[in-house]
Length: 474
Image 1 (cartoon, rainbow, N blue to C red):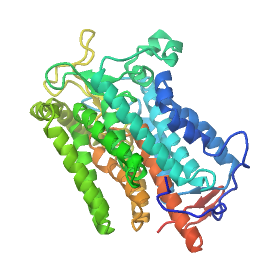
Image 2: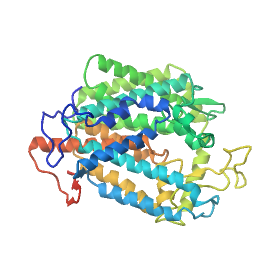
Image 3: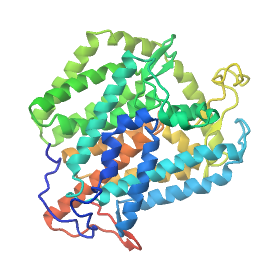
């Protein structure tokens, strides 16, 4: 596959450190290759999400070795956001009105997990952004992201046709029984093909593999679709035919996931792609997109998938719960709009009654977790309005910096960075979806550096700080 933006052989970009010599024990970029090429293995070992934290360590060590480190536009906003996450922990012991009382110590684990996730994805972004084209070509990153899309589709098919499939992972075996049985830990280390839920009025599996939640599955699939498209569908031949087949198969778990938010997101993706191709005058690709959409619609309408969609639309069971948690979150945030409360809180009662709550006989009854049904709500309750503004400000700055890039790579990156602005009302981004968005930022940034190198221009605006070089912005 050719690179989305062809780049002739060249030396390291101006100001970029030289990588390891060819033939070294570890090829530059190996943590990213290990992450994507072996993701099914990590999932089977019980490390599907945890591997992101593990591989962030060698990435960080390599960045330290390569100082000064280059950073993309707006990275200062992300650093301030990380400081805000830490500062908000002073509120962990506060129990706002309308929430269950609890101890600060019981909330430290979730705070640590979130902070580790925010740091790990930033490290991965800086790592990819500081590699040269010779060390880790953009085309290789596109292949890896497109390959992960295939893995996600395969996991979705497994969850659709073998929804009871699960097993005890090696990591799970090593954990103390009391820890391994924790619901949060189970979703991290216990591989399952699907989540069994009663969304349609009866128990049915919703595809989740190779992740712990079906919402994460749909979120990741949406963000990876653009990378799959430019990696598999741009060149005629067997690879394109295989890509079309994968997309057709993907429609099956997408429908069975019952994720209405993902259905909307995919619709917006098609609209975005059509507008992008029309703006660039790529009528051939626009026609191909139209044909693909028609084929998918025919597939859905001529199979039992139509019935599944209609059943989901007739059973908006989660709407009441979601409306209750959003409303209660907005009420709670008013008590600490600047710092938030450091982490999520459990609401008193439920959407049906303030008297309904969890007990030993029904651990899932009432007391929904505020901040668990959308990244925006998580940010508001955990880090307040300021934290949410810093988080969203970083991505807004990136999109603005590279708004003039009309390459195919930019189209895929803009989707991976832009769709979360829609999904933030519905799904949480940590960890893999956020990682995909951050790697997309790195590829946009690398694309800009390559164009500037080809044009013989100097680095973009920015100031030097000890160990940091400001990335170029358009």
